[in-house]
Length: 109
Length: 121
Image 1 (cartoon, rainbow over the protein chains, first blue to last red):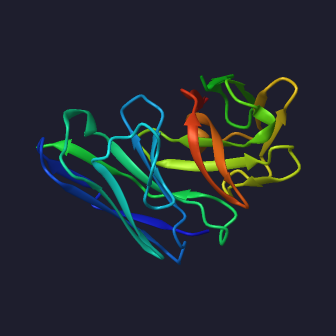
Image 2 (image 1 turned 45 degrees about the vertical axis):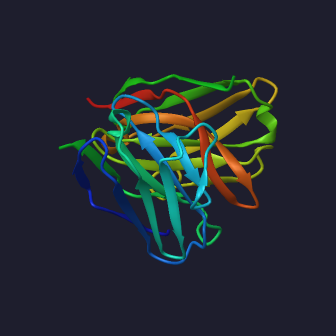
């Protein structure tokens, strides 16, 4: 299976900051990457698919980019509602099972 | 609106069995691949299984292969996960999720609220 590695594992930031989370794949996955946001006790919520396509209803301050093996999720101006854990997920046809990164917890500084 | 509601979780002894169900509404169930995704306490997400829209293709994570069986009933808008030979490391919240995409390229656009499975003696 394709391994996904996120960095950092934890990120401390303040409201209004610009933050970037990185996700690396163990082999090329083209653009087949999604990002999710999860809050404690809740199901994950889809933010971005196909590396850079914003899911309907997701604020435009969320931006995804990348291709191949390296991807980023950028939040341009953090809002209080954005403090959560973020996961990337690959869905390449090179691997029959879909795998997630280990998560990045975004905390209030 | 789209709703996925899991049920069937609970406390089970090691070596035991449990059957999870996911009742779906708000979309044409038979048009979509579906998946079970779990999250162990304090851990990340693991896709344990998914099934094609008509049920003829199924995939399993190596961690559950031979022990778990995914199935669906399109006439009842329901997804199932039969879990046998349960182990302590199967303890997790199990989410039902709709897989969106095609040609083997699927991400998960709608999720249920999850059901807790605890394997302990």
